[in-house]
Amino acid sequence: MSVGSLKDLRTGWFSVILNRDLKLVFASNLAGSFGDGLYSYILPYYVVTSLGAGSVEVGILYAVANLVAASTLFAAGRLADRFDRKKIMIAGWVAWVPAPIVFAFAGNWLQMLPGMILWGFWLGGPTNTAYVATSADKSKLASTFSVLSAAWSFGYVFSPALGGYLAGTSGMSTVFYLAFSLYATAALILAFISSQRARIPQTCVSAEKVSFLRLLRKKKLFRLTAFFSMIMFILMLFRPFVPQFLGEVYKYNDFEIGVLGSICFLGSAILGLGLGRIGDRWKKKHALALSLILCCSSLLLLFASDSFPVLAVAFFVTGGSYTTWSLMGAIVSPLADESIRARWVSVPQTFSMLSSFMAPYLGGVLYSLSPYFPFVVAVGATSVLAVLVFVKLPEE
Image 1: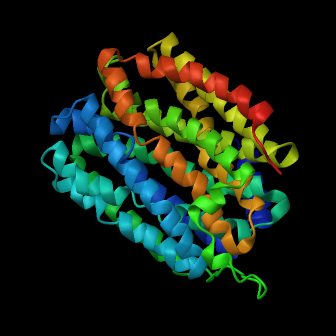
Image 2 (image 1 turned 180 degrees about the vertical axis):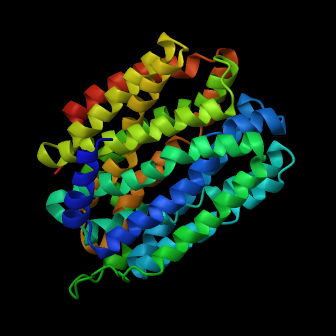
């Protein structure tokens, strides 16, 4: 990133877009994502090489995490519309704190399951989205979500490489313990943000009774949910198997895989900020379609060569596809009344996770047939979805 870009990020986005509370959310995301990035990118490879799992078992572990996430999202939305959103956001990090400790003591892939269950608690998903949508400048919503998503990406820029290095020199236990401390730091930072409760008009007596199925009957929300569910299914079909592919097919080691992961999240940070601006200047769905095109292009580059320079470009480009979740929040959240915003957002988030529940398992089956199969399917699917999003996705 150039000096000019960094200056623009500091003086432009931080001073204009992010208020005090959102700056603290940015800092929390940065700390937590750095801890998460230490091990999350190489975790599938670690489970295979150190804990005796195969590609199908890796798929099962990630399917469990996705199922837990899907089951907690709407509950989190209900809590966020009834209680202080600040406390729910803190609880989201607290649920993650023990997960790396469980991973550190796991002696086989089955013993990873309790940690994957904890890792699947996404209490902060709809809560963060509602908190940001309420706090942010509505004319810069896509940029705000992209900047906060970039905090995650910046945290991942160096942490996968550092995690890979520490895994090779000190062992994965060191990596897991460090992640534990950074998760705790992320929770602590959020203790200093302002409280926020949903504003329910005195005339609105039914807001508390709005159910999941009643929200899903809204035609526009149903269509948005269908689109994001398809997108997340395809992304989760291949993502858990990228490190394994690099290790088994292209023969890269832990550190090299970690470096490529860092490049991926550097691309996510830089391209994500650009996609946010595109979303605010034109349409948010155009930014989403472009992120899918970047994903498709990166997979084609992955097939093209096993040389590190080509892969570095591929992984930088694929970073653009990591903005899907933040763009979902920017597209969906403005369509809801403040009194039900967290529950409204939780509907597409829940179905996105439910749809991706079987995706890692199916990806594992495809990978066991041929390491190239999950990626071939993803190339075709992302290209089709990019066109559909561009012409059919409903928006404001």
